[in-house]
Length: 219
Image (cartoon, rainbow, N blue to C red):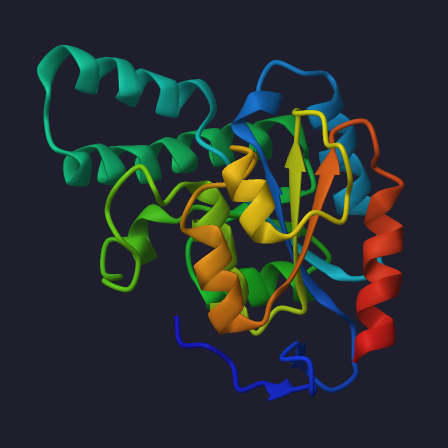
């Protein structure tokens, strides 16, 4: 995937120039056993306020990679590749939960899903196997991978749905990383891409429409 050209506002935020907003929504792996997971998928599939693409976390599949690395002590690079594969597994699970969701591994497939009125769920292993932009370590998790996709799609924003409690929904990416809420690589990536970020607690799906509205005001 190559990034779509973007205009920038004076504050560095990207401006795509009208039309329906494109928003990457990362559903964290910590939601894997939570009934709210199905609710988020249903809301995203039914909403026509924006074009959403879901990026899955690693969930229990990534936990299995961490456990195996602890036993066998293989490199972080190997673990990273396995963890990206874990995102594929969780993504296929999401498509099994929500009938309107469809697995997509390329930009063309994502665009077709939107055209067909479906909810694309990105399976990253095919594209990320060729990527050399991101470090292959545990410093890069599905948070930064989701931002990478947003940049490649020319998306207007990135919404991370988390199970952790947030003291404020306006924390900077750097503070979020320091608090362990997002991965250490995300702040630097966002500063370069200009992608708007929102972190939402799992119970606060009303923030989805608020985020869309805020992005539409920026374009």
